[in-house]
Structure formats: C-alpha cells, structure tokens
Length: 161
Image 1 (cartoon, rainbow, N blue to C red):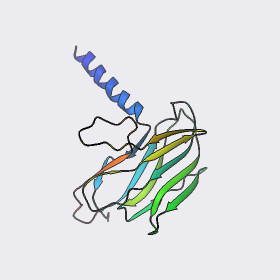
Image 2: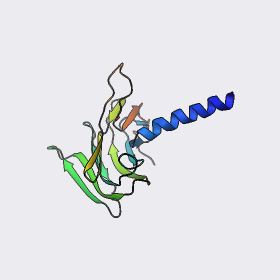
Image 3: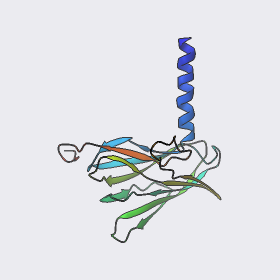
Image 4: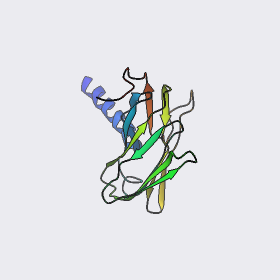
C-alpha cells in the first residue's frame, strides 16, 4: 500500500512538471539581489515540435536584465523607454525531445513577493503562450508564466564576495 501511494505521488508530481513547458530556476531569490535566472524549456510544443524561439518578458521593477548569449542562437533585446530590457528573445533550434536553459542576469526589485516572466515558446508556425498569472483564490493556471518568489533581502545586499 505504501508503495502504491508513493508511486501515485511521483506520478502526480511528474504530471505537473510535464505540463509546465517553461519554468524559472531558482524558484526563490532575495529581494534586491543580483540573480541569474534560468528559463528552462522542458520540451517542444505539444511535446514533439522543435522550439525555434523563446521570448521572455521582463517584469517591471527590474533594475537591469542582461541575457546570456547561446551558441547557435540569435539574441534580441527589446528595450523600454527607460533603457531597461523589456523582453528578450532567443531564436534558434531545440529539438522537441531535448531541453535547454536560457539565462538572464537580473537585478531584482526590493519588494518581497512573486514576480512573473511571461514567456512565449515558438515552434515554427505554432506558439505556446506561458503567460497566465494566477489570480488570488483561483486554481492553478493551465499555461503558467515562469515565476520567482522574492524573499527577505540578504544582509549584504545580495552581493557575493
């Protein structure tokens, strides 16, 4: 019986992971810190189509966002009027049965709480929009935006020595 319950829990957890095509890692960071955030594309659109682009919207309140270039991918940054990055797009090819991470170095807002990075995964002519932001009291959205929970600021301001 214990084995069956454990197996059911593992299957339920893997089903949730399978639905989330684009996620943010780490899941938590210190408010006000400079943090590398990796956006993971877990698989292609509808599991099999190759990912040909990933566009990630930068939430308001970031002091800076600097993307990491990826060999074989083209990088485009759409700037806001204040000069900060508003959206970052990588264009290339990632086979549907593979995964990859797309990194951005960000200066996080000083306010605690969740921040969201709406993402659009393009697979040729198809798009998967991971842009849903959960509403208070509602169930989990079907296409959740990658998110990061900001906790208390680090005593040293988040800088690593």
